[in-house]
Image 1 (cartoon, chains in turn orange, green):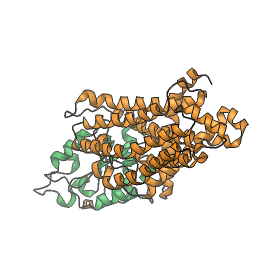
Image 2 (cartoon, helix red, strand yellow; image 1 turned 135 degrees about the vertical axis):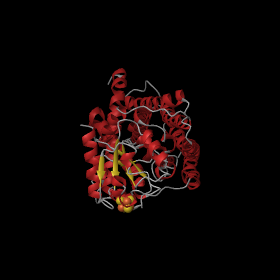
Image 3 (cartoon, rainbow over the protein chains, first blue to last red; image 1 turned 180 degrees about the vertical axis):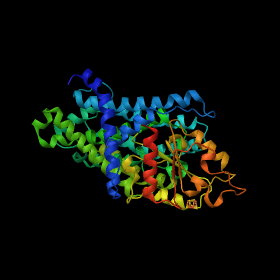
Image 4 (tube, rainbow over the protein chains, first blue to last red; image 1 turned 90 degrees about the horizontal axis):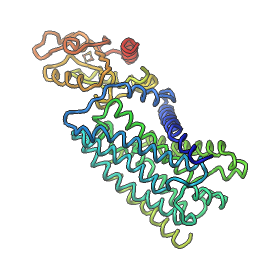
Length: 316
Length: 131
Ligand code: SF4
């Protein structure tokens, strides 16, 4: 597909798919608790409702920052996800690489944090500081995993070069060498924290600090924050499935040449990744304390990612 | 409207009604299948569930929480206390019932009302307000 067309159709497609993913996640979550659960289209209803509600800016907030930050968060995460999807769609790496995508996704949570802490609500500030420590905990192993991908894949950070490298190997990256398997494991372990779901929803802990930095956001602002979150969750799962576990190549040439089939395989795989790394933990586990989460991330994933870098630098 | 988000305010209730509200979200009754969510911040809410007869201490808080909810909003009085003041009516310490203070869209009577009744009350209030 032409790169320009791919980049044009990506943002609406990303929005649609990520909201659908969130709906599926909520449905599975409910079924696992033996509930009927909301319809799969529920996130769309939520957004329509939120956009039609009154806008309230608290008097304690610094209005400019409070108002603009959700827009920046939504725009930035939409951009990151569309770069990823359009790279896969067009089959050529014209715009952006892995670092840019990761940066844009991190940027969207930073924007929400800043907006929330500008609300003047003490819970917003608590959420800000907690999110800050959580980001230090999970972003470092996550970025090390991404960097070790660059070492491992005939040095490249462009998403399409990595996919092509996997095709030329005939194996998903995670299965190609031990170092890449470790990097993939690190990335998947960091997913629940990046998506900030239970057990790592410490910055937003609903029953504890009442959504943290989202507490004062209502109506359209909340809708934008929800879009930012859904889209960046989707982008992370798509990234994991395209970069670490590109399965369509296992089914041979015909599948690879057919864009529709390989893309839908990729999406089904990201749905599976979402089920394993987001839905299951948030259903079966309970929230950790910030110290425990920090300890977890600086023990297992950090060690895994550093050993992945060491292994890949000695050529394993 | 297909996603009424609910904020629950206890204005001096004995906790009986509050437990029944939570029971309406359990797997047996599952209010979330109508898109309802129990949210923690009034800014996110569409429906205000008030329980209890509104004590003097809670009066300014009730008004404040009501005003913090963005329009359009629905108020549902849950329990006999909130609907009519019932055994506490005429007490020195009680300013209620709720409809003396803020406009109420639906009353759910019962001490405490059953979760089915709460679910029905919420859905009916939402439907009548947003049609
Ligand atoms: S109606 Fe009954 S259960 Fe509900 S708050 Fe009043 S006394 Fe308690």
